[in-house]
Length: 235
Image 1 (cartoon, rainbow, N blue to C red):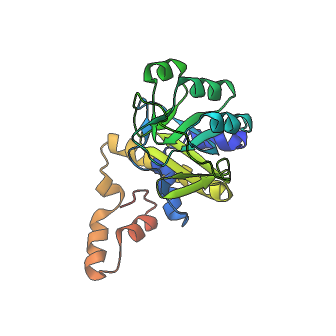
Image 2: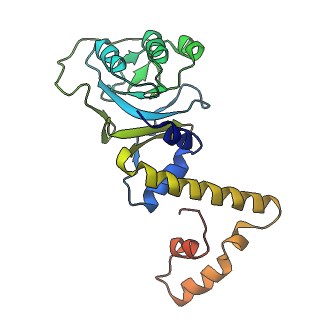
Image 3: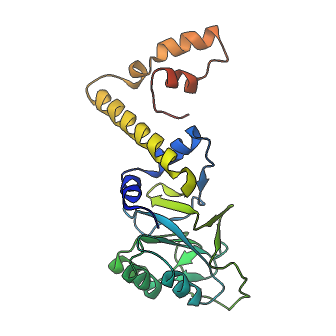
């Protein structure tokens, strides 16, 4: 569970803002595989990770939801399987009624029309009509950790998912990441506003000055230059 203030601050940030903040705070940028997207582009959720590893039966999801707090995100590890869907309308409805803020699946979903009616944000690698093909051996950590692509996440993590993808953040670094992400967001908004008034990005970042300095000193990088002029762009 995330504090209300923290969740509200996360809600006002995009995953790109947060990923850039991870870079600046030397926090690992842990993105889910790019194939994992919302059922609709407008879907968005954020909250504490509530992990569940699927083994062919929905009971693990019911257990995870029963132990979840309002605002948590059910994060499902189905090994990235593309031969079965593991979450459908009933689990989505159960999660919504329990107050969860969304579902992220390393795998597939089904019952897309019903999911759209339910309205709970759901992110997956796509849809497939076929449900679980067989029950597999269930290991001891099914409610403790979830593997999502190359990353292993747990209740010690938060997750933010939007139109650009899914990003996992360690709770212990969350305050620092949010503060930097807010600074990046505000700087970019100011830059965009200045551009609409006719002041180019090259002018704002003193790009001519950068080119001159970089010729004189090839080790002078653009990120270093941006920091000196309070720019927000990452390259």
